[in-house]
Image (cartoon, rainbow, N blue to C red):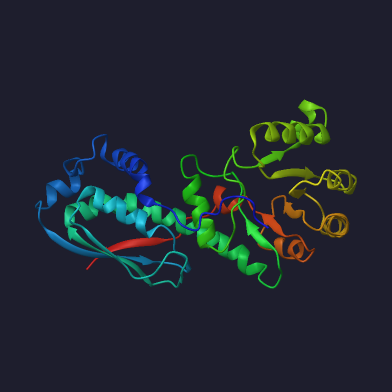
Length: 296
């Protein structure tokens, strides 16, 4: 069903530049423990410490290794151990990670590490809410390109940790013909024709997605045999009609519902028989999971 790359795993060492940038924001430029004036002025350099990160609310954890990369950037001697795994649901009070090393380095990295961990866990938690809501159906929850700039792969990975699936990653791995493309080139049919011609010339076969807002558009688009039809802002009844028509004409087409669904409204949409429901809020407005680091 899914034609695009799925972020089941990710190499967090590829995000050292992002970690460096985040730490430099906190330290006023150069990543140097001396620039944490509170810790460097109140603690001896080698004061040892042990700490743990604990969940304050229920949620799904994601980003443990990125937190580890953050701490070890400040001091390679810091030891991190994970009490849970990414993708695991935790209750309030659950310890998720333990850190051991120089107190100054732990305190310096605390907020940046938590920022990464809280936000990615927030995405995973938001995703799991939607996934759980439609668990009794065959539909899957998918993300969108409405991600934080520079965080796209991280956030899409976090969606997987929450039980969702990934939509196209960007503008390069799938064709998505939207109404503005159609308006600019003379219609969806002409856009699809141009795409297939260009792809054949290059010897590639990217998946083609198209959008429909009415049953009339669904009928015309089905004949073009795209890989996916995205049903945009349709009522549940119109979704059902569209699903029945597409299934009868071309069962191989993936059917996606899109249009601002909430945890409450996604349930009836999932029961219409669509394959996927895309949710922008998984990444553009997921609340951060409440986590704290405490010294022992």
